[in-house]
Image (cartoon, rainbow, N blue to C red):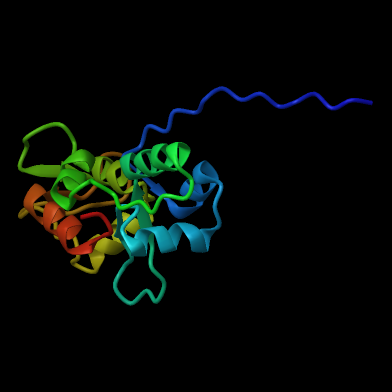
Length: 162
């Protein structure tokens, strides 16, 4: 009996960031290898952990994974440093509008995290809510975060890159 080779279409990853697990699958590396690439500056990431967490919660910039994969394809032995600067990385994850605030779904998408993680960051005052707003349970109950505060969060938690 012969086995039919599995042929998958090229998956197009659409989120601006990805978890370590996703990056290791795309790059065919171990978790330790991916984390080392972040620490060495080959990949750009953010540590989005909640205060009190002992373990880092990395979200890797999708564009830096693509850049690294392309560099490895050309020369697997090359030592790679991401050319993506932190400010460019931050701009690439922000929604494409100029409103002075971001909604919970926009932040969840940018950080590629769940609602509970976002709520934990809000409850810990890491991401303060807009004055006069308060999240609640149910539809439309998302927190509303000042854009400047979210940018500051990203600036203080960026790892890797130039």
